[in-house]
Length: 113
Image: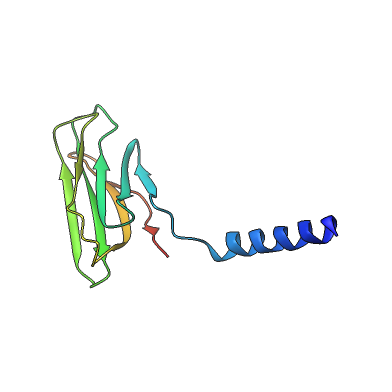
């Protein structure tokens, strides 16, 4: 009986992994600058992790289809967050490193679902 229960539990866990559960926080990075979904996807945050003089921003989209950004230009070790809107959650976000003399660096998108 324990073996059967273990098999059922493993199958349910495997199904959860395949289907996916939206996480409370997800992070994507361009170089060492990372965009995170914060407050259970109610907002987005960008943190500058490179001491290179480049500004960084998070590009994010909300459930109503609006595109928004939050830019951090104070330098390495600093973060900037968008406002939180629990009625209009972020559904995807990405990190963007704004470079002066070479092409900008972009992360892939992280999706809520």
